[in-house]
Structure formats: C-alpha cells, structure tokens
Amino acid sequence: MGYHSNNESTSSIFMVPFVQLIMLLLLILAFTYHVTELGVFSLIILVIGIGSYLWSRVSLHKIKFTIKFDKKRLFPNEVLKIEIQVTNSKLLPVLFKTRLFIPGMITGSNEGQWVSEETVLFWYQRASFSREYIPKKRGVYNVGSPLLRGGDIFGFSFKNILLNNTFEIVVYPRIVNICSVKFHKREFFGIPELWSPVKDPVYIYGTRDYQKGNPARDIHWKASARHNRLQEKLYEPTVQTKLLILLDVENFDSEGQKENFERILEIIASMIVKINRSNIPVGFITNGHVLGDKSKIIPISRSPQQMTLILETLARVGIKNDGYLLDILSKGYNIPWGTSCIYFGYDHGKQTLIVKEFMNNRKHHIWFILAKKDNKYLSTNNTHNIDTFYLNDILIEENQKYEKQ
Image (cartoon, helix red, strand yellow):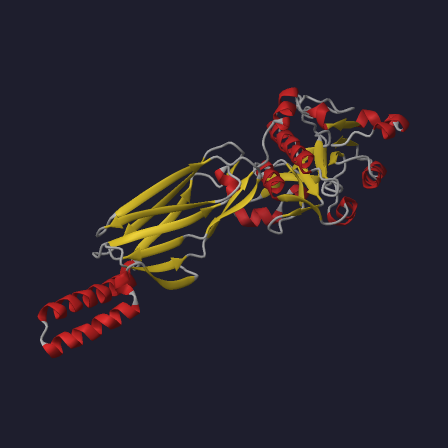
C-alpha cells in the first residue's frame, strides 16, 4: 500500500506533549512525597498516552484498502457507484477513518464533496461502504487521493497515510436525439452498401486464417508469426463508405461559445453511436487540446474499440485549440482514398474554406455542420448551402428546449 505522506495527528489531551510532561513531573513528585492517589492518576494518564501512541503506530499495519467503481467510463445521468472496502488482517482492533474527495461534476454540485467514513475493525474483520453519484457533464475527473487514518479504538491517537492513488473517471458527451439528415450524394445511417468483390488494398481492417488458393501477396506475415499459423489480410471493399469526422475548435473560445461547443460534441457523440450501429468505418481528427496528451488523430477503422476511442477523445477535448486543423490534416494523417468528411466548426471562417479546398483538391467530399449561421455569407455562396447544416438542423426540438432550460 503505497503512500505519499506519513504523519501523526493527535485528537486527545492525553497526547499533548506538555500534558504528558506535567504527568511525568506529577508522578515523580507523587513517588517523592508518597502521594499514592496522585501517583496512580499520573501513571494512568501516561500509560494511556504511550499506549495509544504505540497502538496508532501499528494500526494501519496489515490493513487492506480498496476502492472499486462499477464503471469508469459512462454517459451523463448514468449512475456511478463507488464502493470502499477495508480489511483488518491482524489481531489488534483499530478505529479506521477515511476521507476521499469527489469532484463537483461527479456529485452534480458546483463544489466537490468530501466522503468521510468511520468504523471500528476488530480482528480479521472487513467493512465496506458505498456511495452513488450521477455525473451531469462530460469531462475527465480525478477521484482521490484517499486519506487513511488508523488509531486505537478510543480515538486518542491516529496515524495518517495519504495514498498517491488517483482514479480517473471519463464522462462522455450526452447522447441526444438527432434528425436523420441525408447528406448530398450519401446516406450514412441507412442500409450499408452491398459487399463488393473489388478490394481496396490501402484499407486493411483485420486478418483471418489463410484460405487455400488466395494470392500469396495477401498473407500477413507479422500476424502469421504472432498466431503461429498463416494469416491473410482482410480488405474493405472499394464501395464501402469511409467517414472522417473533423472537429475544428477555432473561434469557439474567443466568441464565448462554450455552450454551443458542448452541443457540437453531443451531436458528434450521437452520430458516432449511429455510425457504429451501421458498421461504417469512421475516424476522428481535432485541433482541440486533448487532456492527458492523448492523440488528436484516430485513424479510420471499424474495430469494436473505435466508438469507445472516439467517445473518450470527445470527453477529453477542450475548447482551446492547439493549432490549425489544416496543419494536422496535411502533416499528421494520410486520409484513405474514397473517404468522405463531416466538418464540425463554429462558422464560415477562413480556416473552414481552406479545409474545404484541401478536401476538394484530394477528391474527398466534405459536409459542414456549424454553430453560427451567417445569412450574409449564405446569400453570396448558394452553392455551399447544400453541403452545410446548422445545429438547429440536426438537433430535434426537444433537445433544443432542454438546452435552453
């Protein structure tokens, strides 16, 4: 059981050094002048003080302390259960106390909450405590570090240990009901296209046991060595839709649009869930700062973990940007051929148009979902209208009412 600090806390007058010194002097005087009652009284106080001190020194020895979460990744308004278990694996009984700080976003309040528990543990006894919380907002929150206090069962003296364990809780963006938007030339949430015999060699989504008669160039040698049998590559068909979601956080912070930023994240999360059900390969790129130095790029894939990876990135991404989105697109990731893109941003700014040109030059069709509607821009760029949507076009009416409350 690792710890950060180890210090002593006194909770009784018997443990005050000055009082113990006085008792020692009284004991000496009692023996000198044969005052029996005073001697007995002083001796009792000294024994209590020294005994409590020694008891507290070994109180946390062979104490097993664990914190369990029923889930560490969840959506807002889901129940998070925290269970604390403590076991005394020795003959000596102890008074055990613990304190744990829970961030306000998890408790559903503006301020955090200190969870305090106290119990007497007799020999080889185990106790458990549980609390339930309902997080309201997305984000990544640290629970801990737990403070353990052990002492004699009378509570005269305690030994403190501050564990350096912290527990990360990831709250995804809220899932909202979104309209079934039909993008020009594409339908992402309908029936997937038929499987094609034409394979796309640049997009490998897995391996399987080698089938006799297939070309030797399809053998995946590294996977074969790992499984100790021949494995061949599985390719996505050429007609399979591939989708890349782009999140440009520029101007959200400078325009004070934190609420719309959160709504954008909720729409992306809701789309990801729908896309995952449709078994469409999807990737995600953002220029926002991602908490924990996690990657801003999630390559296109339809692996079972893809939805979780993107949702966690959405939970971690902040409103501050770490540069231009175009720099990440041009230097950080080679977009597979045939990929379509959905761009989420604030408005029809300069960077939005630059990204559009970049994608068009590489034959990637791109759609825009924006927070701010610029009527002046739309009146002079009618050709852009069919590929542009706004928050109110995507969110159904009940979600818009919820946001206003």
